[in-house]
Image (tube, rainbow, N blue to C red; front, side, top):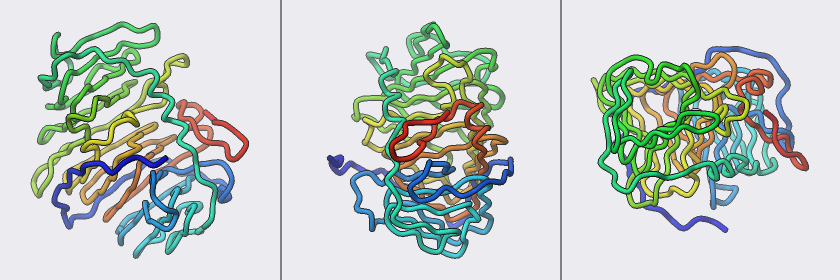
Length: 324
């Protein structure tokens, strides 16, 4: 059953080009329309008919997709650039993109079940600014020690400010943002190692990822996910609770840079990029969104072995479950 219409929060878009990239190149055979999902970008198009376009590239000046496909559970379209993906696979129609395959199987959302691992600790939501090197104190951040990781619960908006490695990367860490946004402060340059951001809440407050917008405003976020074999968040860099529908969309302008390794899961979000969101990953990048529109540069890479090593799960195809 499709989800009911949800409120939208839109920002003015910029004419500047955007970029999503991942460094490692690989070779491989394109997945057939009904075969395993090996996409760098997967759009779910929840509740939309197959004829609707949920994955669009608009004249991007620099698109390089190496070792992976792009895939839509509705339709996809490339206007002015074919992307160079191994295959462009759609349950509806694939138009203008490299190696188009229409009428493919719908890819099930195998990541939604991770939500059972989300717990909530906050009773008020004042929000907090986090500068690399220092975990904010309670009650703005509630810290729990789990068997497989350290878990910090941020009560309200989390604003990342300054520059450097957020937690030091010595052990797996999960940062749960309850009833709040993940906000990059102006000129922030944040790196993470073995960290997952999990956004959850009760749909009374916005839960989007927000970069500075407008000319002259910039920030960068470089993500690397948890690696513990028994950690349920292994391979996940960003996870937006699939129950969230209120103000989850994002419109990233010319100063936004996202370098993401692992899974970035925003299942109800419509993401538009106009700036410089990039995904610099030598082994595996997986973006799962409701819809994706790019007016700039995208450079992603993926290898089957890389995703397996990182713990990023993939759908094997009809009659199968997952890989990774």
